Length: 191
Image (cartoon, rainbow, N blue to C red; front, side, top):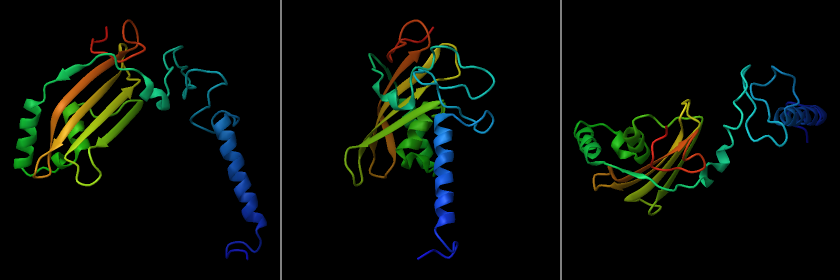
């Protein structure tokens, strides 16, 4: 039986087909310029299509969001966390709430926010209910920088009995646009 909006199913089916056609055109990039802010890449392209009048530089964007997890990490630097954990203690004493969320703690620890063109965050708790340990891996790629392409963080946190989190271990590696570490993350700074 037709719904209250339509006396027959024909207008509904036509509307559904029009939406599917529009989605297909958007995904294949066949809409005329100006109809979409993102154009699909040409078949076989290894870099995303430019989204403005300026073309994307050749060869820089060979990594898409799904492939970020497959870039190897060859080496890493161990970051000191004692001073940060003391700052967390002070925040807890002053009644701030961010120390109760491990992702907020990581964001404060990194101090640069977690934004980049591509950002991937994975959180693995030691158990489903009331975890007391978690590992957060944060991968950022395509910085607006001429040397550092992205970074990789693996931060292990432990929950204290009061429900707040402290950094137990923090690892950092970089990926570069040129020179060393283009195909993998490593502890050396980019030039």
